[in-house]
Image (cartoon, rainbow, N blue to C red; front, top):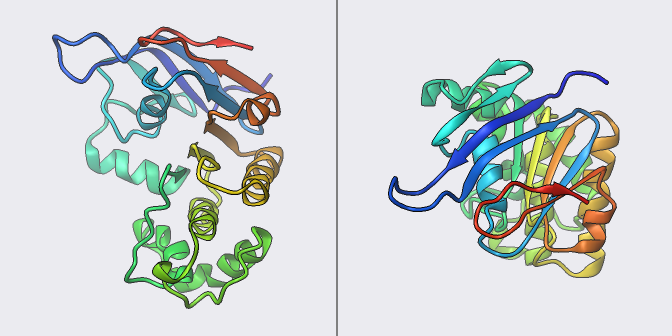
Length: 225
């Protein structure tokens, strides 16, 4: 088997020193070309793990490695560069900029890479078609539905062809048809070589993942199902 893309090694996290850990001594490997699903009760640290892996939150102890190099101890500027170059993220809410058009929202990650958004416009239009977002690309987020917004957010996460895609409940607020489109796109992206890490409450989606990690309550380590 090839080396893992992303590794959490003995990672722990707590919000305050005197509080119990939300994540406790967690070790997990994630590989290219796979889709991993994290499930578990509310409050067990599913989303927290995504934020730690994506270098959006600082771990309390342990280490995180990307392509064999430790990255959790880098400066915030260096962490931001890694996020821009290697990661895509779909949040629970779409978090689209209401002042930008749909296509501008999708191409926004190019700015963080120091590249021109215009260079990604054709790719953005292709993603819009692939995810069946039947709206004019110049429309503003305030003029589209919640399901369309979430699919636009997925387009934004995929626009730079990231090595790792983090998806935090991307289908939670969607109708069945939209949810199926979003998940099938994530499945296709993984099959083409991307490392996809998904948080979901949907057991049917989790069963279709390559790895299903079930998290117990109170920060315990997950087990594979």
